[in-house]
Length: 373
Image (cartoon, rainbow, N blue to C red; front, side, top):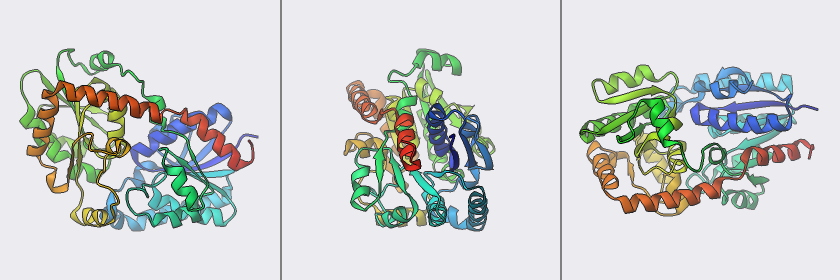
């Protein structure tokens, strides 16, 4: 029997993770059907999107409050439709504030639920474990320390590795990526990755663009991949700055670059998997930052640093996220070849840790939930 899935993935990173998961599930069940909320990468795998994932692309408490009525309406309509359709299992991809309430409703009505990507309860908001327990029959974890934390809370969980570690080659194709982007082999290429949410463009893109203006010199090229639908927001900020905009292609940009100024989140992990030196930038509405800072359990915010348990790469957070500081840290990395070599070696170790054939591992765990194992 080919299972039917309900799925929800929010924003670009969730769409990417879900599309990689779908590939593995379709290898096991070629006739699988999946429906719900998803983005273009999921739809390329045959996913039927009732709403686009961009509807869930909000960042922090303030954005969520501004869009709360629409989000609650979508969640209610989606829940009604899933309860009518009765898929074999519902898989929530990240987006915990949206998915946990939906999963709890579906689970209470007798549907099997799986949550893919454990919330960072080890970093902040540990009280979320209660919501996870009510929402998910099983949690698929990206990082090796997460299942034990969940299991102590009475939640079934599996470490499946990170699908990006499978998708990104151990040796990135630098020359081919540069050729695809029209960059010379001897250019010093700096990638600007401010994020894929509108609020990230609002808060993080301006200091990154200002830093690029100050870093400009002969032989340096700046490239900014723009997430779908965000070009109208990005172009006015870039203005006449010497920055090449490309639609999507963030992996090509990372493969091509020598250094990246990158927003904290999935993109920072992607930069580490591409073995690229980076400066992590993080800035959001002051109220959001105040609330998050008060709940933080550890000093790092960037995934490469969290995995390393040290400040492997610089983090410029909130008031420290200024063009001057970005320029200082970028120039320091560009001038220090031994430091870049140490980072490369550390990122290779992180890549090996996270490469676990995630799609196959996740498909096996979902089959157990379904009773197909």
